[in-house]
Image (cartoon, rainbow, N blue to C red; front, side, top):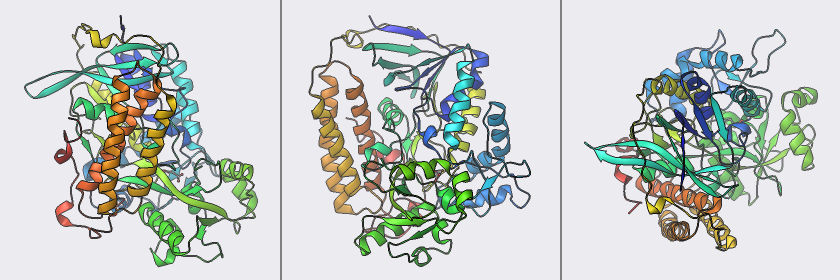
Length: 532
Ligand code: SIN
């Protein structure tokens, strides 16, 4: 018999979006946070840069909005951007109230860093481990809150969505698998909040942790929620190029601090591509690096910080300094070898300003959501801010929801056996690595039509295999995750094929122009084509 867990609010994911939401709604009811590994393992934990917010006298709300719109290449929703930017200061204040300790300058005021695409210093940060510091404080606050229960090692399988009535669907809960006890559970409540993060692992090289496999987006899509703009995958220009470095992020803040992109011979190249040089918007920097690597037949380019005051460098970037040292690179004396790596999904589950999706009682916030803020290319350090703003709005919305009177009657299918899985695990890792290889080869920074069609054929076969393995075997963490992963990859390919222009992060050499006729989100056209 499947176990039923009833909570008022169910949150999938334990990054900044999920924890902020949980802490806000905990005053109004019981909260379950479902997380597939440990509570700390989220994209937030790996964020180095910070939170963009207008705090200096020389800065303005309009300037932050304008920088965001320019980066977004015509697809940002200006109302969403304005709402987010206006709440910047109150979000920072709230995080400080939750115990987050941001870096301060000598005068005791919050230190404002610079990152690509920003015209002002406005990045509030905690040295170069901002995400980790936010996670530390928010996890501590959730642990101290008696209304919140965290379910670690619980991976979400699928949303439970009731039949359409008058064209509307309702989310009544979510099926979850406890990978330690190998049991399936149903969580039901007033609403489900998806905060499941990004998708970076569908590529071979990513700055994301291994858990970023698109689970929430895949579940929402299967349930029939609107998903948009999945072609816009942001590649971070600078991840550490070193064997076993796992694409460790070299924060853009280091370029904001004076680091300069160079070739092996020490010459600069970014002046050929953009007036902001090393601090141009990310799509431009990533494409320029890829081009220079090809032109020079080199596996990487370099980030030079050796001209900066070494004590200051170590003080401001202790995480980067120590990690690079582990790989034998002293950043105060040597240039850092860097390559672009998949970093952030700008598309995702479509939400309104309250993080409400197209399904009743289903919400989404953070990287898995598509709020309209990022458009075709996210401005650096806007994502943590977006997550806090939308999770707060969602919290204010869901506390008004009436109880869900839904009563669950399990079907035979819901009663998965507890038998140990007996399929060959190596088969799953072959499917996973084939997807990653295909996505990297054909759906990366520079795309073309033949490559995208090839990717579609290959990924379709791999996705079907992943589905078959999921259906024909007892539940396991690996089969559940692979099913989400494969669908996420297929969505990215389908969306990339659909957009017949180049814009922001989507660059197709067969359609190099940006077209007025494509100045819109890609949503409806693709829905329902993938899931038969
Ligand atoms: C970085 O530190 O470069 C990442 C910040 C971000 O992705 O917003």
